[in-house]
Length: 298
Image (cartoon, rainbow, N blue to C red; front, side, top):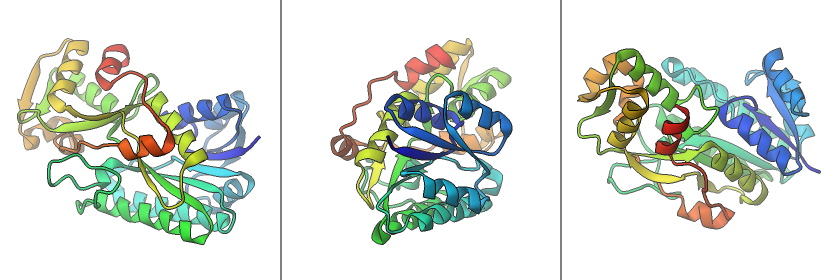
């Protein structure tokens, strides 16, 4: 039975991923920065290493003791993104240095927003990186992790869409959007609402990560996408229906007064394909769509 070290093991995606690993017979060691997180992991029968992304000894220990790593943890402080990106890069480097020459799998995580969508056509695994501030810098971190594929690590990267949705999601983009719309009494979309968001269900994402761990190739980039591009007006309508709210279009500058930074993400047109990844990993999404999950959970 193999052992997997998971950072972010009690987060939204991490919790479901840990369950999927355990279901498939893996042992799991989770990084925990609090006793409450450690207790959640122990209750599932997981091992625990206390620490956070700044704790080099904890990260090195996890990467050394396990047979593979899924690195899900990321500090979501969007007002200090430079610092978050620096911490992420250093944390990955510590684990990857400990894994050099072992051929162990290391699954790095970024978002599909690192990809350029200037042409309006859906991005895929081979689309060039975005040059937009914040997203471009995270792409640098992805490439730094993938470079370890040349140093005896089966390093790969999984890209998640703006929303990884489903039961248990309480902290990501959709919960934040629903809360803001509820607080302000209106469900908002930008312009005509024709800009498109890709999405994937939490359980499908967890299954994707385990398949990447098992079958992913060194240096490869994989897009974890269940739906290529949902017109954002459809998302706003689904939220309005569930929350019994009116729906309203706004300019992005106006919407930012209600939603802050989220308004600018809402306005992005970022359809993304995963055909290459689905074929290579043998993955097919089977769980709820985003609109179904809005109706059921949000």
